[in-house]
Length: 533
View (tube, rainbow, N blue to C red):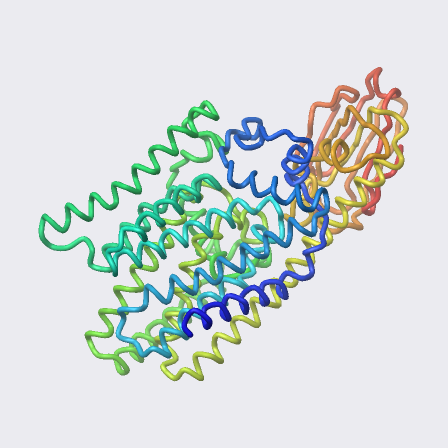
């Protein structure tokens, strides 16, 4: 009966996941999708260690592409379905892990169920998960998180039952998580904190020695992975490079922690609040909100003191501290990487940490609303807000996918030569990557109208809207490109063979043609269409 109940809950999570992301399951490929999936379709599995992108070793991630490509070919529907299934499974595992962690707390069975179901539902509909789920290339975080949660859940089971099979499964899942994405390196720390919370560290030396030996098994798996990865990619750090991963500037870390803390709870914010967050002493709104927040916290402290005795309060404080520590430790692999408060960009780095922020939200609501009906109403309100913002963000992902598809088709249909030059290609649409990478691969692997051997992009631009206009003005010796939306800008300017950059600003470029320019088809993007120049 219990297994059937768990099966029903899993089915509900899968159904809810498909409903939540139904608007993007048939969206086209974007950016890195073309580079990674295109090579897999062509039988090139070198993307497993991805040296050309800084050095990644993610064989399980690429193997999932190989399975999808075998079944679906170049149709994006199947790839999106796989992402949604993994995300729904992660929400279910969040529910299972939450239920295991609150098992020993002095709560009623109904309250434990309410907290765990709420944590899973909040994770499922969290609006900061669109980059990981709606972007096929975000799958590495989905798979790594799936095995991290499974590993931690099996460890909790081992800690309670001391069955070696559960420990073996936990270690195996940890290894699988590492083979999906390097961010899983935080798991030994999560295991250590969880073990301490469950009383596994002990007070005598014999128990502590067993605790250290147990943690040592996870460290051993990690050391083996780091060694194998270093052999394959030829570097110990790899990834985005030393300047990103080893940047421990206090100001940099402070800003990244602020961004991560806000986005682990809230969706993208309006740009107008940037001064509010990063220049607080210059904002009266910040001071007023801080005073209001301090008053609310004070009122909740007084309320809790009146509702709970010293023992329950100590237990609550301890569990809240554990959840906060788990959040920070799971954030460590990505703490040096930039994410945006105002766009969907970079939010995939919060996918695993948000498991613990969602559980934290659910537990706080259970503390504040002792009546389960009131708690249920509060959770429904939060889920309603999350659902609306999730739909709004997914609409941007769908628009970006429509743009990438139309650009690929227009270039393939209009090109008459095998060499094309694109004056301005879309890097992203309001933070959603369009052709940040992958434009040559899109034309090489995802169309068969015209063989295009050389693709040059003069500049990649940020887009606020698909209909943003661009003015191209030819002169006697030069060519000027000007972005008419002042909020747009050139994200990157390349070094094309057929044009020389004479002058540039945030929204304009002056180009001088080189002798090879007339031998190539030239295009520019205007109002979402590729126009032949």
